[in-house]
Image (cartoon, rainbow, N blue to C red; front, side, top):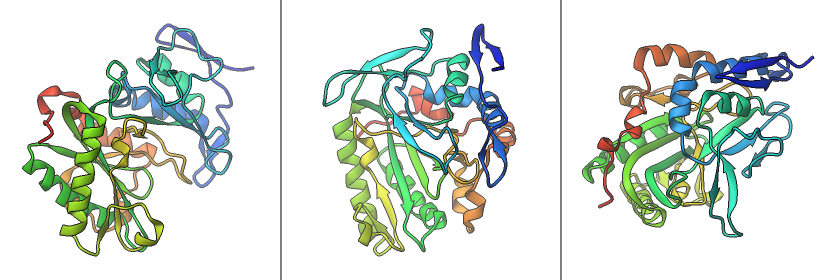
Length: 293
């Protein structure tokens, strides 16, 4: 019999709670739901008012993994949605605005991916993001070196950056912006990626071409495009272990000398929140927003 849980006054059917989703560690679907509940405050803060793309993996990362952008069939009527523009015409997407909606979505078994703009201002970015992706044998250690350069470069333009792990092998840099057209943010991000390639010659590429990437950090600026999304802070990832896209301090970035130090699992997040709070909270405060030069 499917368990029925009451969450914030909503009744939810939570299914297959004993199902192992991460065979490498034995992490179950019930533990996925528990993680989302315990990390709900910061996770919801970064999801709020941003249309969500779901990267679903209902049978674990070794099973079928697929994106769901439109409102899924069977979505409860009380889950908020928003109409968003697309090249092929308007579409409706889910907004995760409260705990009940979060737990409903977590029951789908999904990563959360969100754009750099909010639902009431599509294409007007209030964040800038750089996805630092290492090409082997480079690792997140090299990503941290590039992140420190980008942090200083952004600061020179009055923009304060913050860092999080991707939850995979790389690092994300984010900063709050005075809202600006996504196309302008994209152009600025590309300029900085090109600058990084020049300043850190032989260690960075701003181009996606696979043959250019071995041993270098790819500074992916493309996720600033209005149509693109990035893994939301605190989302679980569809990896062999239940890794989380985790905010990190700049001291941790500067001191990273071992990729293992930047692997954070679901069980690591509550102690980090207890110690640091939400390290990305300044992204939610308009007083920390920088303006494009």
